[in-house]
Amino acid sequence: MIRLMDFVFLEDSEWKSLGEFISTKWRNKKLVILCDENTETYCLPRLLAENPDMLSGTEIISVPPGESSKSLALVEQLTLALNDLRIDRNAGLICLGGGVITDLGGFLASVYKRGIPFINVPTSLLAMIDASVGGKTGVNAGILKNQIGTFNHPEGVFVYPAFLETLPILEKKSAYGEILKHALISSVENWNHLKDIGELDEIGPKEIITSMQVKAEVVQQDFKEGGVRKILNFGHTVGHAIESWSIATSRPLLHGEAVAWGMVVEAELSKSVGLPLEQFVEIEATVRNLFEPIVLKTSDLNDLISLMGADKKNTNEQLGFVLLKNIGNPVFDQFIDSEKVLSSLKKVFEL
Image (cartoon, rainbow, N blue to C red; front, side, top):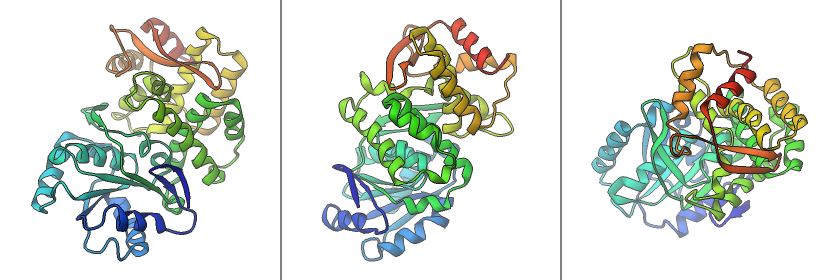
């Protein structure tokens, strides 16, 4: 077992830390596991089998998989379900799933009876390295991502790489987008290591630990995103817009896919603050080699700009970005005219 921070545990082959946590810190609590229909099928049986004593009698609540579950309507349904189960403020919520479950469950825990403790057991690579660590929780407002949420740290994060055996290749690719982001904002060394990985199956505990540490170190400096934590949003102003736009298409994009292409556009914009051309070319080539192209029409660009206008990083109606002066040297609070953003979108998507 590797302990990354006071509350983050990464297991190799044993499953001891969750049971030890429950038996010491959550002793005598009534427990509820929140999962989706996929993790209920593929991950819950193993979790229960590895912790039979600690999790006996636990209540199980399962929701549909996917972004549609990140809604206030479902939060209300879950609140009523918890109330029917007579869950009080002394209970503990275990969020077993990917980013949707950790976002939804963390938000539910922060508002149910004004707050109950929760822990995350992330089952996707993206949730392991990103969603479960930073203390952000939230649900969507229509197609607008994460507009309703709280800052709320879990009491524990328990990472079991064995769950990755159940993960489809597209989900691994999605996570790789965020792993690349952590490398780009941290150091040339991290970037050089990751861009040369030939197969996604080569991503293992070393890469998971490094990526989690990058995020954890930033979050510890600035939990509520008043300053340096904003660098974790590299690729996200454009990426969230692309992700929201894609919902109405024949294949909605996963979060990390959209962020990967968002990073290319924001790397193009980064030339204005000094990003060397050769570094931009590396970033663009890496994304193009790994991720499927996004087919945009010229008429889609104004929709993307409009979606960017709802982003939390904006101020005074200017679009806010994180840009790179160099790989490993991000700068936040960069406000750019929408016409320049349109120009970069046209260059990247060859319109």
